[in-house]
Length: 180
Image 1 (cartoon, rainbow, N blue to C red):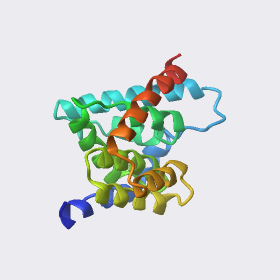
Image 2 (cartoon, helix red, strand yellow):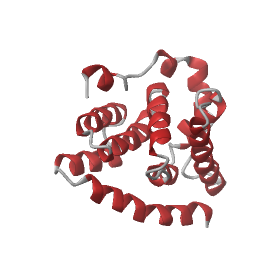
Image 3 (cartoon, rainbow, N blue to C red):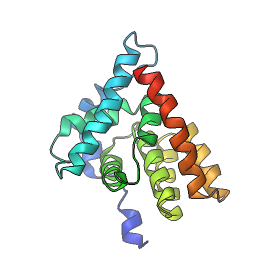
Image 4 (cartoon, one colour):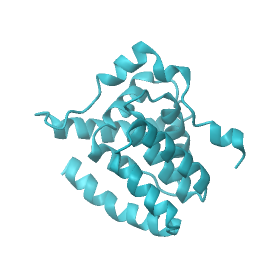
């Protein structure tokens, strides 16, 4: 992986645009919300919808949907759903989607997206990029538990295939929590 490709996950100016940040903030999920499960469903559905947009080559056209995914990723269940929502056939679109979301995520919303992107990078065999993404996650939130866990897993040299199996086993449980 070239240095240019690794640096390509740096934040774009859009990430600090005041109106973009305000739009994303409207999709933040409060853990004590009376509508928590509805917000989680909305977030999980938005992840799938945005991935379909990327598959169709229209991933950057719907800024509302991108903002919705970034904001809803503030919820751990939505993040865990996102972590397991791709498969071998869809990994290419999810890779593009998470990279685009990572470079446009504002401060305070980077950690979950960077962590998911790191997991995809690791599964693709790019440990260096995975660690770079975790650097972004931990710079955004030094106590972000998934980033800390992934750092340990990646540093221990866990086989990517084992991580893939674990992710696939977790996904149906998360789907059940969100969609019942």
